[in-house]
Figure 1: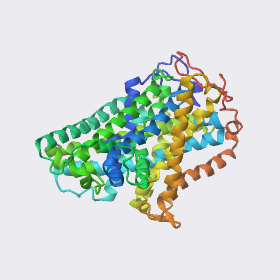
Figure 2: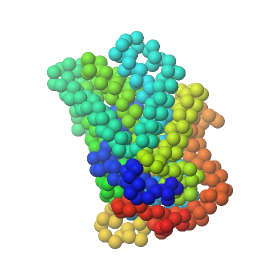
Figure 3: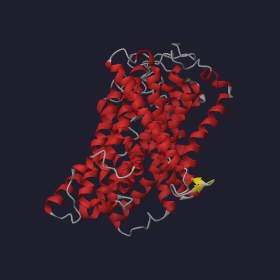
Figure 4: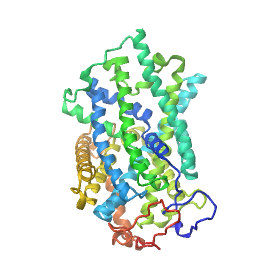
Length: 517
């Protein structure tokens, strides 16, 4: 890796950490912002809220609360593992230390698959809402947003722009995210405030009173509706672990990323529940359950001349998440390359910006090819790919929970802290996500699931399961190369391999066998 050629005191760029990344760029606030921005709260609500309400009606608020539970449990697994092994490879590194190279490699692949799939869809939404905004200002609706090639080209431009920002460094990325996340939460706060004012003034014709039954966990009318809503909510919470992938660029990598992850999940839960309650109270279940985009449906009546702000917030949410999705995936492949789990080129760190330059560029190129390819084949394939995302999310989050339990297995019952935070909570989170994975995969087999049918089963299943199985093929192929042998023999990364904690003032170089060089 290029870090081996770095020397301290060169005077170029930020101080490097153990894998050559810039050191001490993010504090607690910046790390939390990265976690929140990566979930794209406005975009996530646009993509899922209508479907959740269609499945469970007024029980949507409690559905989001219940879906928060496994995510919160897994956040503890991330916190404990990060304290012990603060490596930007996260799931890949932790699963390899716990279960060995083959399982660890597939964990890293799960992170990459999720990132590539969601980048394509984020680009589509960003491009679409950009032209919605332009058309709203200058008139002539549909002139550009109705042209698929225009929207696709715009989405590609947004991917390229966010790749450039990520390539330049986390510090500029954090400053950009401060602004983007601020606009998102301004729109969400105004949404809730305008709903309260409209109900108080009697200008919400379909308003319904808030009821305690909305928060009754036993009020679901069907188990299928309940499980469908929970599966949808996996996507809406996904992304907070970005702050863990940036641990090597955080000021206190053993503590701040874990705290930021916990804060992010709690803030997201409060946000989603508040907006969901406000939406149902304003328009009622019947008025929302048939809408694919709730914000776009109510923006004119609720925001009036400020309706453009909601359109802007959705666009910004998608752009923001595009950048924060690139960050953890590029750093994950960097870590894999450092430990010989990928070709060494992925481990190159830019000598000036101290970012994983090659990995970042490859991530952008692959996501662009996937996005354009899926769009050219059919927009339905692109839509189905986002529905399949829950499988990759449940897979690598669940694997992280199991890795936490197994990695700390010798100290699980030493004290109450270890029992709850290294054993019980991670295990419960992993089991819940495993159940979600199995239930989701079974449902996706139905040819009526999603928009496409491939090989007689739902296209969502083929895309979701097929992308994960592709990882099995790739790991076998990579294991045949000479360069990979230290990894698959357990020499470059194993349970006892020392991982640099980037708090030291000097640069420590790992040798091939994982020791200090």
